Structure formats: structure tokens, C-alpha cells
Length: 80
Image (cartoon, rainbow, N blue to C red; front, side, top):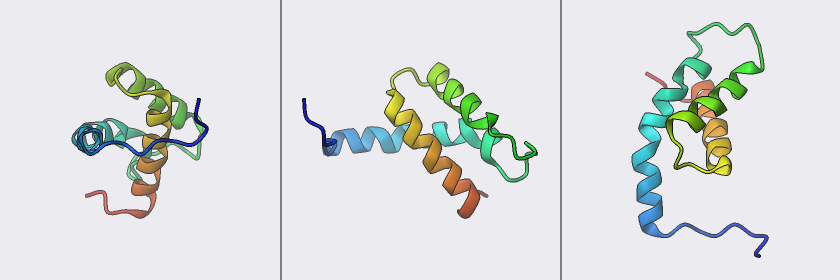
């Protein structure tokens, strides 16, 4: 068992790029600045379960990384 993550093959990267827009939209209610969560940390747990239910092909690690990425994009990126 290798302790370092493997680099995805080019086909895997394309699959990830194709799945990200629907995943991003599924996470919008949890991280969009226009929604009011009152500083609650519960949105990450709800976001995790939403992705787990709607995108069962994603591993727990992929879900975790996607949530972190989406959170940063909504916090600092252009989300129009």
C-alpha cells in the first residue's frame, strides 16, 4: 500500500472535470454568500451527505476535497 496519492490518468481528470459543475451546483446552497447560515459549521456536514447521496461514485476523499474547493471558490471566487 502506497502512502502517497497517485496522479490521476488523463481520462480520470476528464471525468472529474465533467462531474464538477453539477457537484458545484449541488453545493451552492451550502456555501453561497447570499444564503444565510449564521456562521454555523453544520453546512459542511450537510454538504458531505448531499454529495454522498447524489454522487455515490465519488469516494469520501473526493467528496472532502470537493467541499473544501467549493467552499474556497464561493468564498474568494467569482460565483455568478
